[in-house]
Length: 206
Length: 206
Image 1 (cartoon, rainbow over the protein chains, first blue to last red):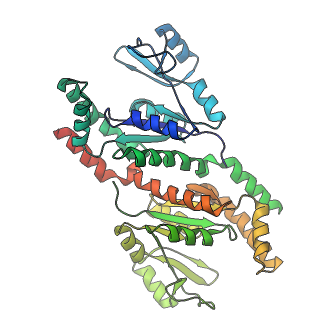
Image 2: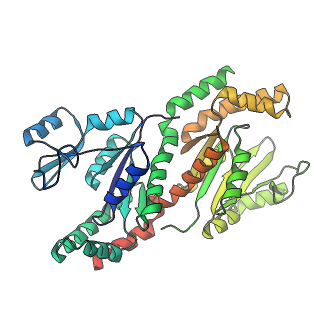
Image 3: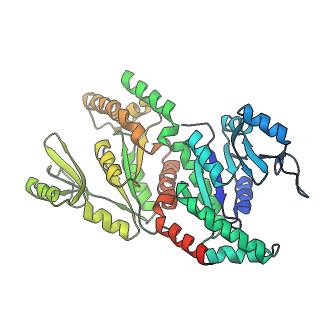
């Protein structure tokens, strides 16, 4: 069977609980590696280079684009965000399933380039619940919350492009479901061409 | 989320262990229903109408074809085999995941008609192991065994058309893997159009 790691993209509304979900997944299973994005924006308080992001200059970033060192990149407002290729491919070679937490535009670019990538969209059980969670955080003004809800409505337009929809109702079942979505991908016929060829050859000779 | 049952087709070489696998799956989980095929061949000793097959006359069978009462059918030598539609659709409506154990031609016809069907191909870890299992049964002549191996080599040509390859090395892990392949299908974005539309509407109004 396929020993190479898989690539999984996780997206979802702000407030859907992606962060907690990923943390729990990585804590529970050691076959995952989380990809770290490169960005040209400045680190915020508490952020460390190489943990939340690789913080690079715009010159560095443009250089990476030119050298095809990014799997995907996008510009939001005036900053660049991208996924360094080397780390992802190395981890996959080692057999790690690599998870990218990125937005829809990046997700679609990656799917085009690596069709076996699994796209997972995490969402709350309802729009009401999303609002409750955003308010419940208590860290943001109603203005920011409403902006996030509007952004969610926009993002919702692209949900059909994802492979799986994961409703984050209970973290426990949700983590297991995500794990299974990624694990069954190892058994995809399209990921096991070499094994299939081998068994065909064996059957001819037997 | 999608409450309707899924359709899963299980195929595989004779000797791959499909039978044991399905029996164990149905014993362990109560969300499955096994589809029973209709056939025009005569019952063999020990076979009961409505358990192994629905045994019907050729006239009955042709009538079912005409009334579009079969999801798929095929002719092997001079007998017809087909999947009655009503049972499958009723069980799916009730929320049961329906499993069809049929061969590749039928599998492909079903996938064409119901694109969300999951096609699973069960195989032994190697061609040698397949031979060992067939001999180990002790019920068939070497001639029959060799015919089965030749048939396996033919069937192997179609394996890439399947969604998943399931290697039956240990029944325990294999049953769980099959269960997961079918269960994650409930979360496919393409199976949750209604839920996605609903959340989009909610987000617009919030």
